[in-house]
Length: 135
Image (cartoon, rainbow, N blue to C red; front, top):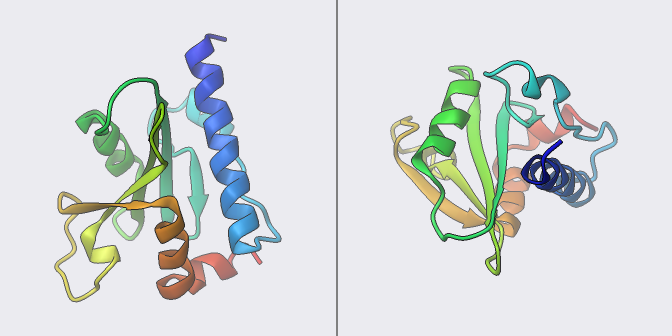
């Protein structure tokens, strides 16, 4: 296994543990191990949230292909989320803007980037049913 693969798997576990603890999940999130063999699977699934995690050394903005990967792994009735981190920068989460305000038209191409802490607040405030699945 390459060093970058180890770093990615470690970041996925870190995010799963953070969400498990912050949301009080009794049925914990676990990495979807089949994603290494099957192309169109996310790293984590929380209710209708399909989450891709990316840890990268240099940079500040996620690659366009990362968002495309999340969209590809998200079914029509799901919500994509890209959780990413660059060295010396905080963890950020990219979500479609309609997931923050349901008065906005559903469109996966209109996004906003928020902190991981804000994403957790978003889940607790607007997506209780997705959390309840894991309680």
